[in-house]
Amino acid sequence: MYQSMSAYQQFWRNCQSGIPAEVILGSPKTAGCKNLGICQIKLEQTRPQANCDNRTVAYLRIDQPTGRLLIHFLHQSMSEGCLNYFFGKGLFRMKDGFVLPTSVSSALMLTSERGACRVEKGDYLILNDDHFLTVSLRLSVGVERQHVSLAA
Image (cartoon, rainbow, N blue to C red; front, side):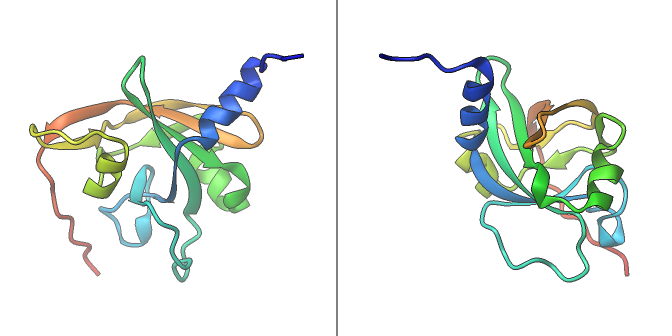
Protein backbone atom coordinates (compact mmCIF):
# COMPACT_ATOMS: atom_id res chain seq x y z
CA MET A 1 0.00 0.00 0.00
CA TYR A 2 1.35 3.42 -0.97
CA GLN A 3 1.65 6.08 1.74
CA SER A 4 2.04 9.69 0.80
CA MET A 5 4.82 11.78 2.30
CA SER A 6 4.08 14.32 4.98
CA ALA A 7 4.81 17.95 4.20
CA TYR A 8 7.84 17.77 6.50
CA GLN A 9 9.22 14.69 4.74
CA GLN A 10 8.79 16.41 1.38
CA PHE A 11 10.54 19.54 2.68
CA TRP A 12 13.45 17.46 3.97
CA ARG A 13 13.76 15.65 0.63
CA ASN A 14 13.71 18.98 -1.21
CA CYS A 15 16.47 20.36 1.05
CA GLN A 16 18.71 17.41 0.30
CA SER A 17 18.00 17.62 -3.43
CA GLY A 18 19.89 20.92 -3.55
CA ILE A 19 23.46 21.39 -4.72
CA PRO A 20 25.96 20.68 -1.93
CA ALA A 21 28.20 23.62 -1.15
CA GLU A 22 30.56 25.11 1.38
CA VAL A 23 29.43 28.55 2.54
CA ILE A 24 31.72 30.87 4.45
CA LEU A 25 29.63 33.34 6.41
CA GLY A 26 30.68 36.95 6.90
CA SER A 27 31.58 39.78 4.57
CA PRO A 28 34.25 39.62 1.87
CA LYS A 29 34.80 43.35 2.38
CA THR A 30 36.42 42.83 5.77
CA ALA A 31 39.52 40.90 6.78
CA GLY A 32 38.66 37.55 8.32
CA CYS A 33 35.11 37.68 6.91
CA LYS A 34 33.84 39.75 9.85
CA ASN A 35 30.39 41.36 9.74
CA LEU A 36 27.19 39.69 8.60
CA GLY A 37 26.39 38.11 5.26
CA ILE A 38 28.04 35.66 2.89
CA CYS A 39 31.77 35.81 2.28
CA GLN A 40 32.19 32.86 -0.13
CA ILE A 41 30.28 30.00 -1.70
CA LYS A 42 32.17 27.02 -3.14
CA LEU A 43 30.52 24.05 -4.77
CA GLU A 44 33.04 21.50 -3.68
CA GLN A 45 34.06 21.04 -0.11
CA THR A 46 37.65 21.86 0.51
CA ARG A 47 39.90 21.34 3.46
CA PRO A 48 38.79 23.61 6.30
CA GLN A 49 40.47 26.98 6.18
CA ALA A 50 42.80 27.67 9.05
CA ASN A 51 41.18 29.80 11.75
CA CYS A 52 37.82 29.91 9.92
CA ASP A 53 34.97 29.40 12.34
CA ASN A 54 32.43 30.67 9.80
CA ARG A 55 32.61 27.64 7.49
CA THR A 56 29.31 25.79 6.99
CA VAL A 57 27.91 23.05 4.78
CA ALA A 58 24.71 23.81 2.91
CA TYR A 59 22.45 22.76 0.06
CA LEU A 60 21.54 25.37 -2.56
CA ARG A 61 18.46 25.39 -4.75
CA ILE A 62 16.11 27.77 -6.49
CA ASP A 63 12.51 27.97 -5.30
CA GLN A 64 10.70 27.73 -8.64
CA PRO A 65 7.51 29.63 -7.69
CA THR A 66 9.40 32.66 -6.32
CA GLY A 67 12.77 32.53 -8.10
CA ARG A 68 14.53 32.97 -4.74
CA LEU A 69 17.72 31.24 -3.68
CA LEU A 70 17.11 28.78 -0.86
CA ILE A 71 20.12 27.96 1.27
CA HIS A 72 19.64 25.02 3.61
CA PHE A 73 22.49 25.31 6.12
CA LEU A 74 23.26 22.01 7.82
CA HIS A 75 22.78 22.79 11.50
CA GLN A 76 25.42 20.36 12.74
CA SER A 77 28.11 21.79 10.42
CA MET A 78 28.31 25.03 12.45
CA SER A 79 30.18 25.86 15.60
CA GLU A 80 28.09 27.16 18.48
CA GLY A 81 29.68 30.60 18.08
CA CYS A 82 28.87 30.73 14.37
CA LEU A 83 25.31 29.60 15.02
CA ASN A 84 24.73 32.27 17.66
CA TYR A 85 26.40 35.09 15.74
CA PHE A 86 24.78 34.58 12.33
CA PHE A 87 21.44 32.96 13.26
CA GLY A 88 20.91 33.75 16.97
CA LYS A 89 18.29 36.47 16.53
CA GLY A 90 16.01 34.53 14.18
CA LEU A 91 17.20 36.59 11.20
CA PHE A 92 19.96 36.12 8.67
CA ARG A 93 21.33 39.56 7.86
CA MET A 94 23.04 40.40 4.58
CA LYS A 95 24.74 43.75 5.27
CA ASP A 96 25.92 43.88 1.65
CA GLY A 97 24.83 42.18 -1.53
CA PHE A 98 26.77 39.13 -2.67
CA VAL A 99 27.51 38.30 -6.31
CA LEU A 100 27.15 34.57 -6.91
CA PRO A 101 30.23 32.92 -8.39
CA THR A 102 29.78 31.83 -12.00
CA SER A 103 30.13 28.17 -11.00
CA VAL A 104 27.23 28.50 -8.53
CA SER A 105 25.01 30.41 -10.98
CA SER A 106 25.65 27.79 -13.65
CA ALA A 107 24.96 24.88 -11.30
CA LEU A 108 21.67 26.52 -10.29
CA MET A 109 20.92 27.16 -14.01
CA LEU A 110 20.84 30.91 -13.47
CA THR A 111 23.11 31.80 -16.35
CA SER A 112 22.04 34.98 -18.06
CA GLU A 113 23.35 37.17 -20.83
CA ARG A 114 22.27 40.17 -18.76
CA GLY A 115 25.04 39.67 -16.20
CA ALA A 116 25.75 38.04 -12.88
CA CYS A 117 23.25 37.07 -10.21
CA ARG A 118 23.38 38.93 -6.94
CA VAL A 119 21.91 38.07 -3.55
CA GLU A 120 20.24 41.24 -2.31
CA LYS A 121 21.17 42.79 1.02
CA GLY A 122 18.53 42.70 3.73
CA ASP A 123 17.20 40.84 6.74
CA TYR A 124 15.82 37.35 6.04
CA LEU A 125 13.73 35.15 8.30
CA ILE A 126 15.15 31.75 9.21
CA LEU A 127 13.25 28.47 9.16
CA ASN A 128 14.85 26.25 11.81
CA ASP A 129 13.78 22.60 11.80
CA ASP A 130 16.69 21.37 13.99
CA HIS A 131 18.38 19.76 10.96
CA PHE A 132 18.54 22.72 8.60
CA LEU A 133 18.50 26.47 8.97
CA THR A 134 16.79 27.58 5.77
CA VAL A 135 16.99 31.09 4.35
CA SER A 136 15.10 32.32 1.27
CA LEU A 137 17.16 35.06 -0.41
CA ARG A 138 16.11 37.60 -3.04
CA LEU A 139 18.13 37.54 -6.26
CA SER A 140 18.70 40.15 -8.91
CA VAL A 141 20.21 39.61 -12.34
CA GLY A 142 22.26 41.92 -14.45
CA VAL A 143 24.83 43.21 -12.02
CA GLU A 144 28.48 43.58 -12.90
CA ARG A 145 31.04 41.40 -11.17
CA GLN A 146 33.15 43.25 -8.67
CA HIS A 147 36.55 42.20 -7.46
CA VAL A 148 37.06 42.83 -3.78
CA SER A 149 40.54 43.30 -2.41
CA LEU A 150 41.05 42.84 1.29
CA ALA A 151 43.29 45.32 3.03
CA ALA A 152 45.72 43.69 5.43
